[in-house]
Length: 80
Image (cartoon, rainbow, N blue to C red):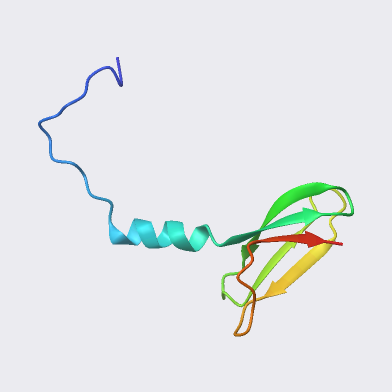
């Protein structure tokens, strides 16, 4: 039966730095409340890291948030 026994004698596996970096990159997102359809969605950064691009999950209205100096520290927005 898998998961029934705990081996306390084995050394604790350490996560590789590569896995931690990938997780950090893939979790770059903004929370957006789309007022058009009253729904929430996450908007993720593009591969170049220059902007966040997404769309309303119901009506497909597109949103873009640029990434650059002088930006905002906010993580949640309302798209009108």
